[in-house]
Amino acid sequence: MAKHPQPRRITLGGREAVALTPEEYRQLIASRRQIGGQSARVRVLAQQAKRTEELLRELETLIAAPEAGPGAPAGRPSSDCSGTCRAADVPGETNTDPGCLRCAIAALLRRHRDPSV
Image (cartoon, rainbow, N blue to C red; front, side):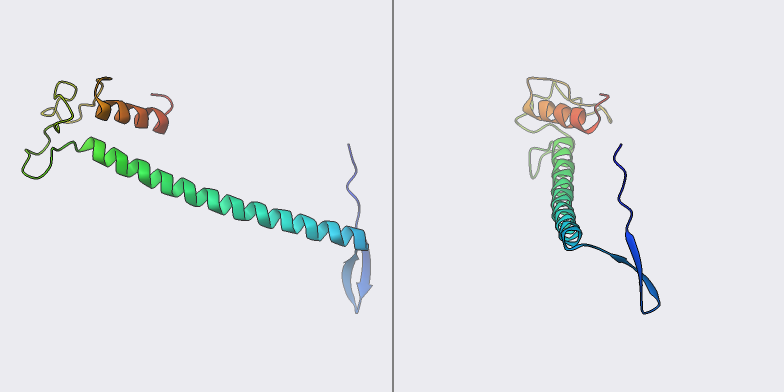
């Protein structure tokens, strides 16, 4: 296994310091730049993950509340849902009909949110 180089310690003005060769200093600066770039990429990915999570939550909310629109009875399936795939009158019932787009999307979201399902 490669041995880590030991820094050369010096004393300047009564304070301990580490001496680097110009090549070691260039390598140190290059490493700092790489770490800074990686850190920026991680921040961007974290922001994208948060936005994606918010989008998924909003999609789940839309799918969970399939109302036909203004004036439609609360909790009733919309016109794109046949009504046979979702027991609208049974609280907690989940959509499972693969022929219904709403049910297929809900199942897909559940499957990706919880891999054990």
